[in-house]
Length: 119
Image (cartoon, rainbow, N blue to C red; front, side, top):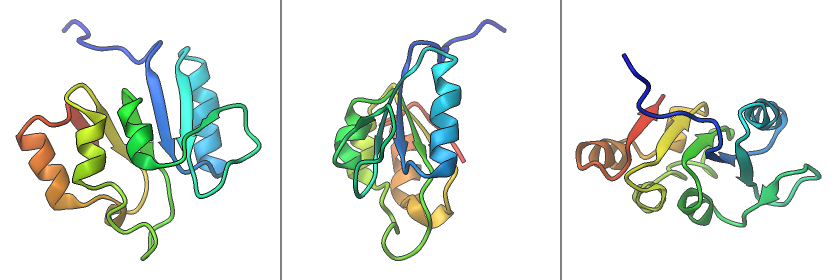
């Protein structure tokens, strides 16, 4: 089966730039991906910091979520973020399930608001 899409050269957005987020970003460089991220405050990393998740989603082809769970991040990925990711965007959630608004994700997939999700 031919590949329909490749990650090389794509734009990767990372929500959370802790130890695992940094490891993902380093691996993305091997695929010649541009990497941007969002966190509560900028980190000392060689990647572009974007102040909020909606703006990060808007400029990403792939959005990887790697944040802690809990009240502060519950439904951080919501309908607004998914709409900003757009019909060609792919969401990959490596975080706790509570970080993604499940109803909004199902709706976005059914209505083709985003291209797909890896959970």
